[in-house]
Length: 160
Length: 390
Picture: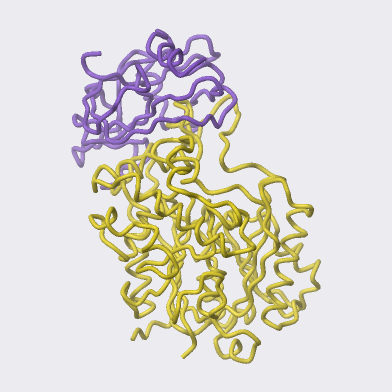
């Protein structure tokens, strides 16, 4: 594929941003993050929340890093964010990505959840210029062909 | 003058390096090269290898002290020590552990060593090919973010955004390493000059890193001998006195899914400050710096967080002329990880000691105080300051 064709593939592929073959995410064996994977499968974005601190936490941990309270609850948050940082990846480091470069990875902060951050792909043309601070919204990308299936939280520009 | 109990009590007395090779080009196995580098360091120091009584390494070193001790007929092992943490973050930390063991009387002759043949074992620059991931990699790998370059590019991009840093600043770091390598016959990139044009036209690995912003992958081994400063004075080479060595991290630097409180950092904000307090010197006293290049962006933040310039000066100060051994801010005078050898930064400590001895291929005139910043952007990081014996 030429870079132009690849851009179109990224832009038009309705299902998955990256091709199959990458590692499937699985919950910790101790169940710490199971509520997150269950929620995003239902198109609901959740993160941890400490009611003692009235503050969100991400990534998941058994304890609130602020007050050391154990067993934080998961709460739904608005699936909107803004670009905190980004990278355009040109060199594949995995066999599944040999024909998929370039692709975009973004670090998104969630203003509605104390600016916790999430890594995801930015959907659409990977060559389109990007600006830190741009507003994005979550896209729930369901990988149903894998056993067991899983969901990834991806991002697209607001208005795209 | 610092009265810190670490300052000036120990010295690096022996330097040992195998020939450095491109990845997969070494004729010898990793463990054999490890033994060779240790023997070379002992020969340089003028000590019997059997007198080594302590072993310090880092980054899950494969060549274990039990096997080395048997191979070399070590008379009495008193210390077998591993710095916890990946990447090159532990180079100066392993030195700090050696220094601490000597000062506390646990042992007398410590070898700090690293053997790394990426052609014989796994490559750091490749992503793992696995069906599932249930560790913290799950927050990044499914999105195609899995190599060190990809992990660190995100922090570097943010730093460049916050401080208005231009790509030319990263280019200058790369060019400095290649420039110095041309005077260093040991350097893998000796004879391979880098120009602005070659850098600009080189392919992106991951923005903002071109090919030449990324360290090499090599085969080789390196070792240094550390003793008390008193013992070092009786040995053959001029002692490179350890003024300070420190390890550590800022708060929550490796919080999962890129959630560090302070994100755009090399992670030297605390360590750098403590390092100078131990050494009793200031950034103005540093004559030459060896700054670990996993990627040029890490060098940039390490220089800033060791106080050698401020973030808003980066665009002006980061030039090839300033970075040369003859410049205002000489760095990476052997070629470092980019152009000499990626020996996980132990070669940077060796080059700092060489500068103190006056034996660098790019000698900084009257170098009396040398800084080493080991691998940035991991947890923990470490750095050290060496000086001439007074």
